[in-house]
Image (cartoon, rainbow, N blue to C red; front, top):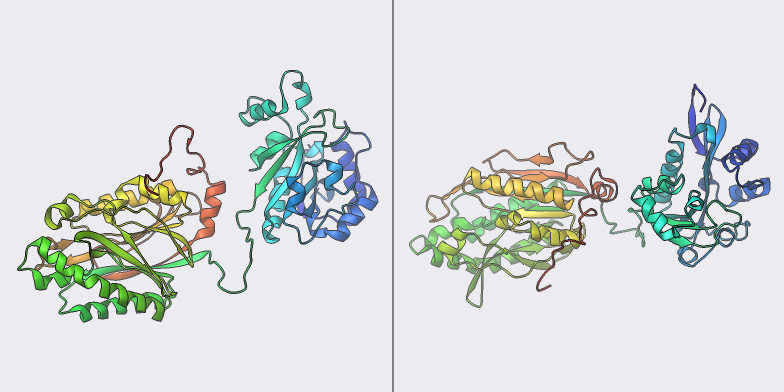
Length: 509
């Protein structure tokens, strides 16, 4: 490497670069004499796919290059060699309507190695793959150090040792460090590659932003706006008064363009004041008679205000059994029920509630979501099952009476965001209900929590409401950041689980 560098430039290859390109390639492959691209090869590549041909310049001199084609995935799936994939070096396999970016060459001049210039070329290829909406980058990488071990190791064992860093391969080790994964071993891939014993490793990098069926309307959004309602418990004269307050909040959050409105657990409890002369168990069963009318009204509001509404929760009687349930009322007019799985000792003792038995996620026009009611968030297995189904946002309507109860919900919700690489939105009730037994005081601080990595707030808190104050919280969450986290995070919790040692599953899926 030269002692002083003034400028490094990455750009598309130009035909005038050919002489320096050839010189760098000759120096890069001393063991393969005569193996360099001729002028007519470069001219052809530039005519069919100029944006796919990249060079690195140091102080105006070409010191590295990455050359690519677009091919059909079916070609990659078949057993092939270098001659096949390049159309016997005519590049007839290039298809501008294909779905895979195939790397046919990448090299850095020996005098300029150690500067991570190869990484720049790989990053540029990845960016190109995303811009062209291609499924993946695929190429067959040489394993030039394999020749030193071929007498004692099969290619498969050699690759595993390189993965575990027991052995170093000048090409494969670098490719694995750039987030490529091994698909299979290719035999007789590149004629004359004696160092690799003519073996190669087919490697792949998946484009997490690939859209198989791009649409002009109803595009899946990457930035989702959440509207959280921190509900003040207050005396309500009748059901219409409750509806009036609900519509006020739906109007507010939809006015800011929210995609979701989240209401708290048991926010309709003020209606139990009329039944305070009854036992707690009898009063909440009277409240349950309002649950179906509440669902219907929220369904109407979801359509009218073009917003998905998570209705918090309410008591629900089915075949004489009392559950704590809520409804996802979608803006397309449909609705789905969710139930609290784990009921608290208080809910059992005073109300005789029973936990639900169905763990599921929900498909929405903003992606897949999960919903858990209050106490459920303190059981990590539930959200992990949801994450395995592709959940990106977990909504948690809650009701807590004291600050220590709220602390349990808050910190468990933050843990669920980190361990499942998702957003978690919690919304609760504030204030007091002196005329409703077993519902006298409430404490809440609604919030949206995030994973903990560089793309997110350092404390994992996207936004928080003012404690114990009626208000709304409007928060944008970016689903693309979750995709980046899943694949390229500082830690990748979902990927790094030891499922060979432990796993969780639904008993009754």
